[in-house]
Image 1 (spheres, rainbow, N blue to C red):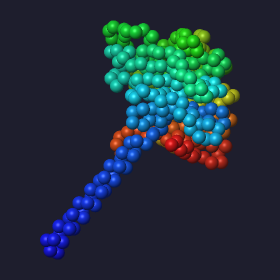
Image 2: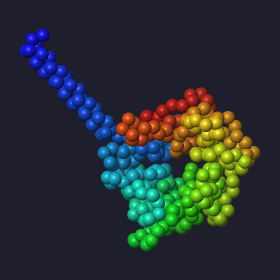
Image 3: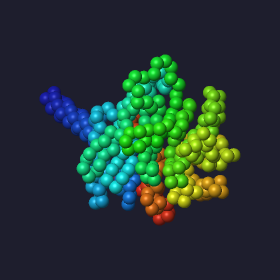
Length: 348
């Protein structure tokens, strides 16, 4: 090939390479701009979805209408997160708007330098109400329909304008919160934050997951503690009753409670003590008999599990990592009658 031909060939390669790079940049840009499900959601009547997406540093809360069309309910300020959205009325949703968990380890003021709000929005009128503005990190809220109030779970929550001086050890607190903003502490937990909160007995009691050394933890006991399910009376929170099996040393990381308040599905490790990668699954449990039943054979870890209104589907989120090391969340549901098994719920 002569010199002129080589020049033409290399020119074509450069043009083609440049085009591919530009196309890749466009695709990457589009991927960055596409709204991504954050893993935060709730279920309403007839499996109506309330969910959160993130795009370019802004999080948005959507609710599905009866015809399946998504309606924007709330858009966060840039850099703030929307957590734990719940249906709190026929035309109302409630959620946490927070600056997020501190990046530094807890203790030296970090949790007091973040802020959290409990917000309600009327989905018909769009009216927004800030029920509570607090210093600290709110992690979860539950709506107590019987008493028309919220249960708030958070770390170092305070309505004081200035942070406390000096070293502040980790402390997680549970509160009741009324619509007028009045809130009252139920109890505190040192070293741990309770997880997978569920209301039972018409809002009189709470089920939760805690390590079994929660009453008096030490650095040594933390390595040997087992996560179990406990029940606590809201008006008498000092003593917690064990719900899961006493003799088992296999941790429980997630659970849902059925309407009969006796049947549970909880997530545990199927190959505990065998070495290798943990195999997670959800297992049926009868709290009255303290007996486990069959497993669902999902065979991987899930989070944020919820039952639909008719208890025919179990909804949950799976988390994975993208090539750029960011987390990706996908919503699934599992047919509990065994007809369809697992299917993914697409959130656009």
